Length: 205
Image 1 (cartoon, rainbow, N blue to C red):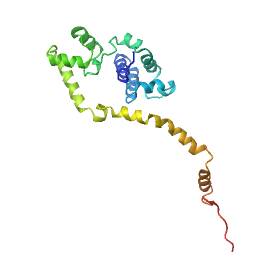
Image 2: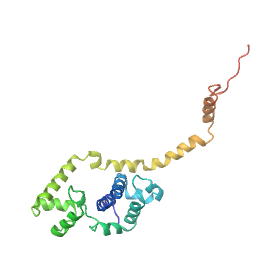
Image 3: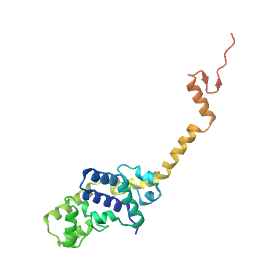
């Protein structure tokens, strides 16, 4: 099963809500935010050191990310959250893990899209759920255009290969014995006594 980056971020946010300790919840939440703009293809080619270097990504969130990439499921998510992997109801305002479980059991919906359709058809009349769906619709309308159309992801995909070339360009410019570089460095170190074209020759008296 292939998961999307949205699924990985959703699982991390759900785990953040399920944590009792604030620092653990904050770590999972920060890790979910750090993955914004990435793709699963990028994560699969990144080394463990590169993933762990992302803000908020520790050993716990790293294991969750890798298990999702490899198997499409998360043992910790199933144990601590207990919701279907495709459930995205937790992104609704006022909906926690227990509320999401009640919605699934009572109405048989697991996604926001299904909940919106049920409210539209009148099958769900609960005031809190109707209000949550309305607020979610307003949030999507106010979503910045570059996030709504995936511009951030497109830019990261475009610039990702270039980012790997930058360290090599810097290394070559600093350490390779390029003649113009030696002239410039010599000019600076000698305080201008050596010109870029060569040593300054004294003029005969």
